[in-house]
Image 1 (cartoon, each protein chain N blue to C red):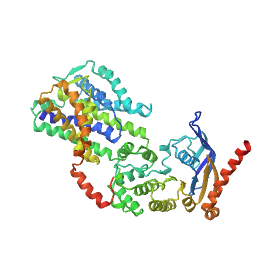
Image 2 (cartoon, rainbow over the protein chains, first blue to last red):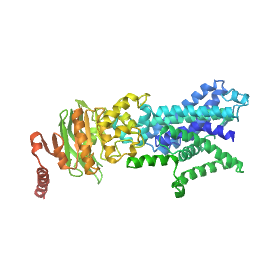
Image 3 (cartoon, rainbow over the protein chains, first blue to last red):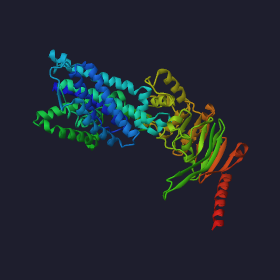
Length: 303
Length: 263
C-alpha cells in the first residue's frame, strides 16, 4: 500500500501536466504517452553516461517541453485537430525514444540516482519516503498554482475559457497554447525521469496508456473536490493520482494480473466519468455545494 | 483617428452562397466621435466592426488607425488600441475566472504578459473603484466567478473591461440587444459615461433606432453593404425614428426602381 502511495505522489507530476492541458487549456493532449518515455529515456541515458541525476532530470524536462512545443506548433500553425496533433507527436516520439535510448530496455541497477540515498537508508516504503514524495508533488503543485496566477498564467487560463475574449485583449492564443503544452509536457517528462529512477529502469513501453492514468487522476480528484479554484483543483489532482494508484493496487490484490492493468485503468476512467451522472449520486450534496448554495441564495442568482 | 478607405468584403467567393457584405465602404472618424450604426440584417454592420477589429481582413481597401495602416494586422495585435464588447454577454468575459482575474487580464491590454502576479493589492484597489462606478455592488464580489453573474452584470463588466484600460477605439456590437429593457438602459447609460470619460472614438452597432438616435454624435445607416445615410450634429439631434424609417424606405424604393427599370 505504501508503494502505491509513493507511486501516486510521483505520478501526480504527470497528472498535473494533464490537468493543465485538459482542464485549463481545454486541449485533449495525447502527446503525454510519448513525452513521458522521452523524459524517462533521456534521464536514463544521461545517468548511464555518468551525468548528475539532477541534470538528467532537467534535460528530461527540456525534452518534454520540446515534445509539447511540437504538438503546439502542429495544432496552431499547422491547424491540425488537437487530438490528431497529439497522436502524431506521440507516434513520432516512439521512434525518437528508441533512438535516444538505443535499446528498448535500459536498467539503472548500479547507477547513482536521486532515489539511491533513500534506498540505501532503507527509507523507501516508509513514512519518510512518502513525506519526501508528497513534498515534491506539493512543491510542483504550488509552482503551477503560482504560474497560473501570473499575467501569463491568467492569459493561459482565459485561452481555455474564452478564446475570443482573450484575443480581444491582445493575447496571441497560438502562443499561450504552445506555452501551456510545453509546460504540461515538461512536467510529464520530469515525471518520467523520476519514475525511471524509482523503478530502476527505462522501458520503451512505459508511457503507453499513461494518458488514461492522468485523466483518471484528474477526474477522480475533481469528483471528490469539485472546486474551480486553481489551488483546490491542483490539490484534487494530486489526491486523485494517489487514489488511482491505490485502486490499481487493490485490483492487483484481489487477484487481477498485471496484464489486466490497461483494462482496469480504462474501466476506472469510465466509472469516474459515469458516476457523477448517475442521479442518486447527483442528489448527494457535497460540502462545497452546500456552502455555495447558501451563498447563492443570499445573492439571488445561480449558475 | 479611424479611417476606412474603399473597403470591400465578399464571403464564400466563387460559390453559390457568395455574398457581398461590404461594397466600397469609406468612413472617417474623428477622435472622440461616437457613431451609431443601424441597418437591416445582412447590411454589413458586423462585418464592418470585424474588419476594424482585425477579426476579418478586407478583400480590398485599407484600415488606418491614427495614421497607421493596420489592414493586415491580426486582431490580437490591434487590441492595444481597440476595445470590444460583443452582443453575447458570455463572449466578453472568461466565465470560470473571478471578476478580479478578468479585470487583471483587461488591465494588461496589449502589453507583454510576464510572470508578475496578475492580481496585486494595488490593482485590486483600482478594480474596486472602477467597479463601484458601475453601481452594481460588484466591488464587493471581486472573488466571485464571472459565470455566476447575470447577463446584465456580465455585460456591464465587459464594458468596463473594454474601456478602463483606455483603448483609442471602442467597438460595440449590439451589446445591449440580449438584455431586458431595464438592463439594456443601464448598460447604455454606462456606455455613454465611459465614452465621455475616456474620450473614446466609438462605433456602436444597434438594432434599436431609438437608441441609435439618443446615443452618439453621428449616425450612419447601412444597407446591402453600403452606407446610405450619414447624419451628425444638429441634423442627428432633430431626426426621429420616423425620419429614419422614411430614409430606409427611400433607399429600398430607389433600388426597386433600378430593378424595375432594368427589366
